Length: 198
Image 1 (cartoon, rainbow, N blue to C red):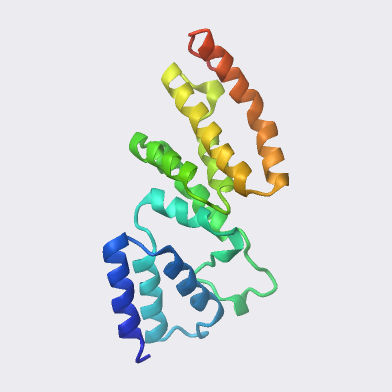
Image 2: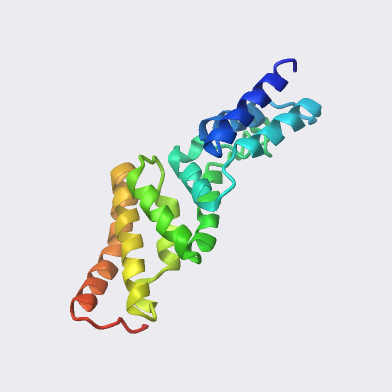
C-alpha cells in the first residue's frame, strides 16, 4: 500500500511521455486477475484505475496492445482467476482486438495508420484483428476501385504480418479463405475496371 503512490507516479510519468504503457498494463492486469482479493478494497480499486491509466486510449494503439502479446498473456482486469478456474477465458484479448476493427475500418486515417504500424512492428497475435478488419472490408462487395484497392491492401499487409507471427494452422486457414479474393481483385485492377458487387 505504501508503494502505490510511487508506482502511480511512475506510471503517470511513463504515460506522459509515451501516451500509454503496454508492458505496465499487462503486468497490472496480471495482478488484478491472479492476486486481487475477493472483495475489492481501496487498494484494488486504485490498481484497477492504474490499469486504465496505462492502457492505450486510442483505438489503433489498443489494437496493437491486444495483438502485441500472445492472446493468453492479456487477462480480463475485471475477472479473477480463482473465480473462473474451471472455465478459463482464453479469448479475452481476441474479443477486444476484434471489437476495435469496425471503428478503425470506418476511419481512413486510423485504417492507414493501423496498416502502417502493424506491418512494421513485431506482433505475436495479429491474426484475430487482421481477420476482423479484412472481413469488414470485403473485396468482392467493394463498390469502387478505391475501396477495392484499400481492402486488398488491408488483407495483403495484415495477412503478411499474420504469416510471420501466427501459428501454421491459423495462417493456412487464413490464406485459404483470402488468396482467391486477393487474386480476383488483382486481376480486376490490372484490367483497369472496378469490381462489381457479388
